[in-house]
Length: 289
Image 1 (cartoon, rainbow, N blue to C red):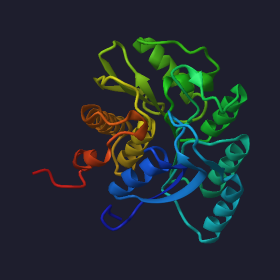
Image 2: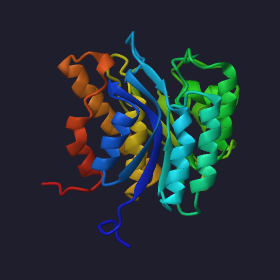
Image 3: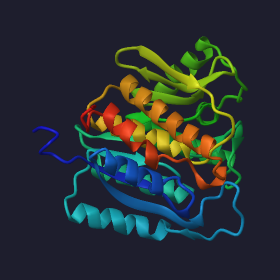
Image 4: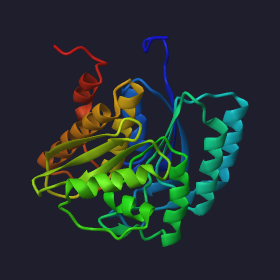
């Protein structure tokens, strides 16, 4: 069946922030623009994301996640991919493990973005034991997309500041694959201060690839979600792992650059919406003039 006649479907299990572009408010539009139907299971509902904002509301939706799963199963919904991001508790890790068991098939893929840390530090809402729970989730994944801090936590290693060496990055990639996933995408990779990007590893072929682009000053919230969503969009449009990561790096970098040049408050998230034309051209979903 051709892509034109078959609409692929993703189950996206993330939190939902009413303001501040991240998680579901990033995943839904990016995947939809890439021609992929996306079903959302919120893990929490917040008035804003937590990066730089105070006074935000937080509604834990753990109690609704098993009923979501049961209802979707009763409808015999089939997913081409299951895509997980922020999970707020050990119980949610257990629920998502159950979701994997319920909806995993031989011909679909599980992508886990183990959202729990950055810049060498575990997010304040988590304890070190949470990384152990996340590692169990990653064992069931086909693809994982950690940053370097998360990679170290998953492996029980001490975080190291960059710049990095290729030998160190390749060691992380191969060690992460030994947890279970056959494909690993590592973000936040750089070998000198001028460039930043991602590395990919396919354990079946042994292939390692890098895509690095010029670094843009500043720290921007939600870029991990932009990257992982664009990566999945590439994979579900039949691009290889390395091609999909390269597309995601360029899309994320363009979105950051637009935000930087506009001088937008970095708490609000990056301007990915106006970068859709470039993404769709790279995905070959629109004709290039």
